[in-house]
Image (cartoon, rainbow, N blue to C red; front, side):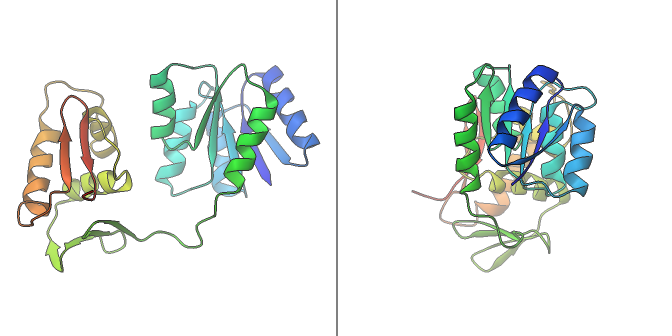
Length: 225
């Protein structure tokens, strides 16, 4: 297994790299987030272990960039940022696991082993499905009960974000960041407007509601229970 360690703290990085090499892993070490991104894009990497705070590009931006580029390698965040919000941010950015420093090496090894047991996707996912709603990622079309649903670009992007995270609540702030590339703006109603339009198209003509508003939290799309 080839592991990339993205860590700017020399002491921590040498400790992790030495321990993993002793366990038989091939470990490359970089100290800069942008260097890590380039390495993952152009080299064979089976697992990324990344700090949250690095020069060049922080860990969250690194993982978001990888996911945007459809790089699906497993990612473990290994960081001193320990608040619940920090953990949530890391996982929502695309991380598969989150460990807080200081840590026990045996636990890191166990988490690597657990991730390595996950079956790898044999082919790129081209369709998202929630109940009877299907989103074709190649054709950029939506279909429910054999009916084609016409979506504008932002409506499509919003639906894709929700369906990629089916069953999970996506906050208004995250939607602004991921769909409109906005920072938080309490004055805009663009999210609410597009949610309303999307609901009219994917839910109103049908018997079963898939798109739900979670008051004070955000929005989710889920199959009926």
